[in-house]
Image 1 (cartoon, rainbow, N blue to C red):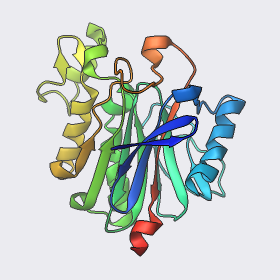
Image 2 (image 1 turned 180 degrees about the horizontal axis):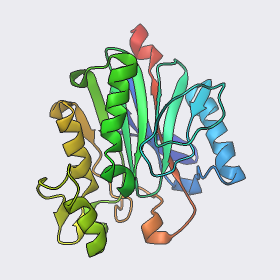
Image 3 (image 1 turned 90 degrees about the vertical axis):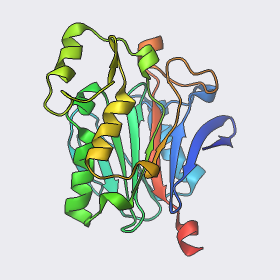
Image 4 (image 1 turned 135 degrees about the horizontal axis):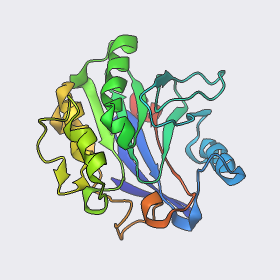
Length: 244
């Protein structure tokens, strides 16, 4: 993990050895809320800042639809986006929900997944892997995964009715330690999905950054500040690494 300053803004980057995962922060109030003109402008700015031709994103609906990005299409509804295009980033918006970046180092395919509690309950990350397997013949053992900043169990207390949704779910029913009292651990939920799909644990990179209480980075947290700011978590193929 490294910090990248594009003055006056700050990003967190992770080198996936063939792809770059990038997580924006809220430094200097950098905002990617696409419902606002400022957010739309900053999405366009990514092309200049990271030397990209296209930036793919979705109308996120807290579901489990996985979309293959085509720059000629209108923006689609969904919570996972995939591409194998060069000079192209795909990403998701977040402000507590979990951004999950996936890179198939053999097939040179990248994906970004938005996993809020509804998507986590519906195993949206598992469905993204299934889409990669179906459309690109990806193999789980070739996947590199990076789980970005999100609200951690320390700050994510939920109600009993909410808790029972997970405890009664067929996938999570017998999974240990996803709750500490009434606090949900989204990281562990997603880890169970990844391991169940056959992703190697050593290929899972986890950024230990809570959007609600970390002190190292300025980040948007919907639960903490109820603001409209959004981070953008994205990935693009690193053509320089491929050439090297």
